[in-house]
Image 1 (cartoon, one colour):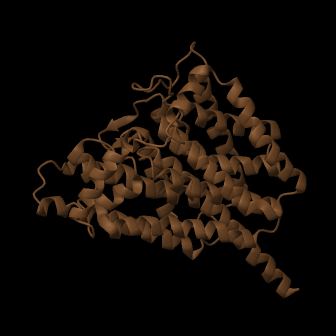
Image 2: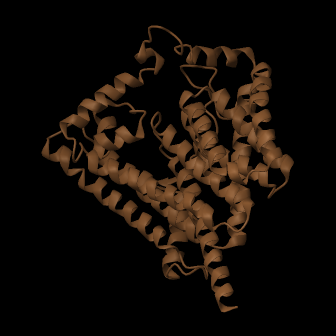
Image 3: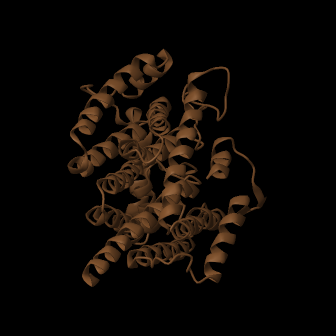
Length: 409
């Protein structure tokens, strides 16, 4: 993960040859080792849902390859098959390997808990560096947006992607703060910097994703939170936001007000309010209507327009049609349902709160994907998904084991 942040944040060149980088060598080596061991790196048997999500993902990859026949049939001269194949390999195939490797190598309670705590620190440090980048003029770690110069690119290479990745992890980090599974000063500091970094990116999609994720977390964990924890959250969140607003440099408060200034207007210029996204969505929608079932080919929108569509679901609709988009949503639906239903197998309220935070992060992600495209940052998502699924798998296994021992007694 640290190498990935160096690659996305400071643009560390780790490419060995085109299509093969240092991270590929590491992840391929780990995957080959897994295959050699027949995926038996833990005594805990993977839940069948893991095989199901893996098979859905593999189907998605095959469908993306089949979609490349569409631009050939339609004689789309603008379509780049080389770029499409590289994208399938780097976004989909490598993402699948990250998902599988992180699942199997954390399918042990000690490794899983260690990795969860490590995620808190890594994301917290990434958010801290993003905050430092934005708050001081003395240092520029990741750089700033070329158009809106006050917006830090952040640890994940682009303001909106940085905000969404941090929003994905924040509900889980909040859950760690509440259960005290690691040093409270460290976990609370990480949470504060996550909030600060998202606000400083001025990403509307990131802020909305964070709010949705936190609301879902509170709703899912409400029955397991103590009264003092509920009171603490109800006071600290609004008070922290208020204090943070007055502590923020004026340039950021002005930027945020400007980016949300369309709210409350009687007449809203949606194209201006969405920073041009509605125009891109309109173009994408019309492209999808040209081939609604099978799509126009993976990466068709970018090949045709040269721009990002800023909506992952619409990107799947344009590229792989209703079939591809439905499969993509079904994959995340399956993961979310498995994670959220794991709460009833938890032996302690601490585990229930953590699972609620992990599940809420998925909702934050899916909310943000309606406003942003992810590229190399998808790896941080699949790392999160792999470890989350492994942790849920362990909880369910231990539940079955306890029940089995009780029956024997």
